[in-house]
Amino acid sequence: VAGGESAFADIMNQQAFLLGMRDTHFKNATGWPAEGHLTTAYDLSLLARALINDFPEEYALYSEKQFSYNGITQNNRNGLLWRDKYVDGIKTGHTNEAGYCLVASALRDGMRLVSVVMGASSERSREQETQKLLSYGFRYYENHDLYQAGEVLNTSKVWGGAESEINLVLKEPLTLTIPKGQRDALNAKI
Image 1 (cartoon, rainbow, N blue to C red):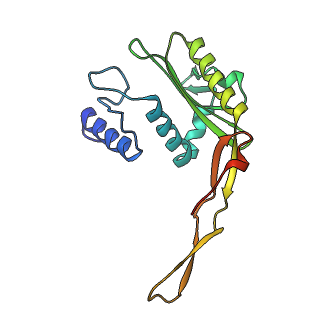
Image 2: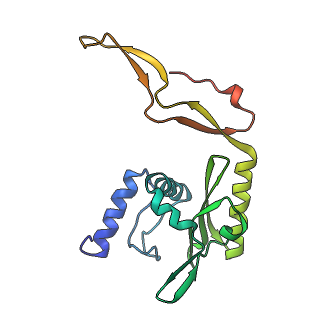
Image 3: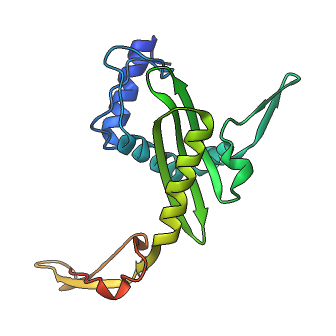
């Protein structure tokens, strides 16, 4: 696609930058350890969010528990898919340098959470720590729909235009994830 793996890694780095992944640098396409090949939990959460939001059809593949091809069946290594009905992805990983890692996502009652666990000591440990993070998030946070798409938030004067004033609206709805019980403390300013 790019003429070689290092050129492909350059494209990966460009895309990472566009996603806001400021502490990530790819040296190869596989994720295998290499000098200067690095990322952070925060950057992986940005990548996960982009995958979920921008590629929903492809994202659905991450919830598949098994995949069969040419007479060979592979099980998904994300054990949470079997233990938590809300978990629908995303990616496990392991190297000696990084330990056992899991970027997971779960959707419950319209609220999606993404967790990133890196450096765990075992497959079981990465799943337990991920489950703790997701449980904490669902227990102590909630979504609050702040504004709907198309809802008039304000108006602005237009000088020399066909109209003297235009409505200011959001293209998409704005939902915030906030600590439970804090809705009344929100103070929106435009």
